[in-house]
Figure 1 (cartoon, rainbow, N blue to C red):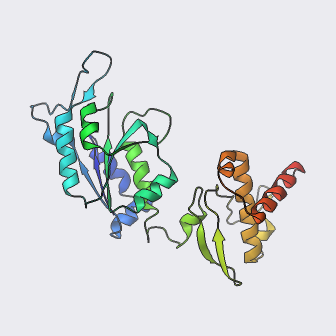
Figure 2: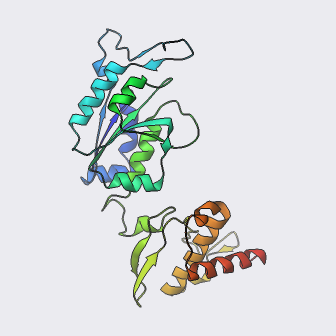
Length: 264
């Protein structure tokens, strides 16, 4: 996949993308990332990319000409079918479903805004979609662009260490996740991830659940599914309302609720 970011702070974007999961994806050739600075295309000696808004008001607005030229240069490097996205507090919510949609595209063009936003004419002519990473306002769109890149990159084939790692994560797509010796295992989509443990077995009097130590894959899967359902019910109940629970899932959720009511 090829991603281009149009930003006034390309060094900020590049610094983050040089490490972690995304950095390894770039090193392995699974992901290519470029940046384009609109200041490169400013025509005055001060490389001005913003101006006062028409009609008055606070702040400054990014000018259309340098941004449009920068977007055009970045788009020319991308494969056909790469959507042009503006990171904006006014955009539609960025969700795991949108991340999966983007992961199927050959590329992405991300525009990180600054100040009071960008000239509306640019959005009308040069942008396909607006995305928001949450109901709050940031100083710029760079963090939003990095969130999109990180969420999409981990869904690309070969990026994560395990073949089915993303299926088990919160909001995961679900599907086949291996076998337990008796047949294929399926993991449901759209749940929060349950608790995880590692060594030591005991810490401050708190022990790793026995079921995770016994090596019974069917029992472990059942426990994990129950914890995932229970955590979703406690923290994001609307996610359960959006899906039809299977007979097994309803039984496990009832068990979880009963255990919680008994203080187990």
